[in-house]
Image (cartoon, rainbow, N blue to C red; front, top):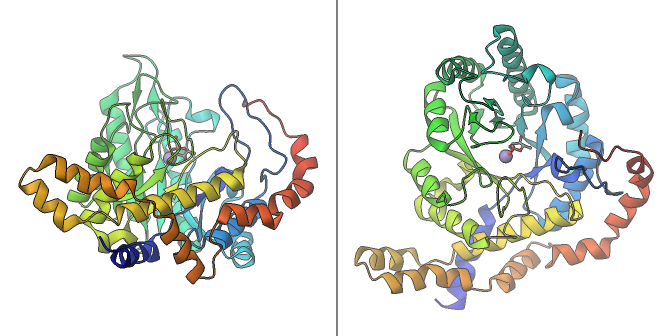
Length: 395
Ligand code: LRH
Ligand code: MN
């Protein structure tokens, strides 16, 4: 493929590529064995918007910040005026709204699947509050992850829990306004270790279909068994027109929430290929979002690294000669097809991506620009005292 053609394809793809940051990616997070506090970590919503603003300023492709209701809007809709101010101040919009039905004590036996009708009603109330917050903020997606499940066989009725779930997700769908969507995220295990009520893409598709036409499925790349073929699931969801979006991260073992492309960059390339092959013009309907916890890496650095890695992998996927590949696939010319496909992954697209950034008055190397900006040193000064006295144990 001629260099000029490569540039044209990459520029067209990058002009449409945007990826949403998670507010919790800037905060101190850890594992069940504790968390290592970072002096520069964000603890307030103001600081999370400030860090997101810096990432968007240096990358130009991450204008949205996902919010987690309990963590970012502890006062519910009353926190909306503050968020409006922060959006203006930092040039970042409130993105997907993430209800939290996994933290409070009464959800021990579940939230929307809890045998206790009062607790289910409380969970529905929180979901409806989250819908309202999304409406008032004008954010499109309500991103629902349900941690519900059980730890021991025979201790819960899996069937009855499906009925309770359907009922409540239906009520949530009814509350959506026309512009809103509800994304149903599946996860095979953790925190539950025997059964999880929304454990895989099939369950999520059925629940979304039953809930209504504004419901779609969210694919968190960390929520799959080791050998599962994630891009095949993506192809099916595209085929069924049920793909709502992604939580991108990487993993070696389970839901490790490591930085995108750090373990298996080829995985993300294969996912982007399915999307660019099936629906290059429908990309805006697919929410590309990051869901990571930066337990050891500097959080702003890790976020910029992630946004840039996603951008570069998307550019590579744009270089696959899909017309030629379709011919080679049709005629089962396996090695040629594989070389046509994987050849794009081997391409070093960084010079094109740098040129794309330069043309848009963005720093060619956002990570170097961050280092030269002194931003991390400044927020470290401002926040280290407050962070020093935060608790480091997870519990
Ligand atoms: C669950 C999950 C979900 C979020 C949480 C922070 O593992 O992926 O998307 O709410 O992480
Ligand atoms: Mn997730």
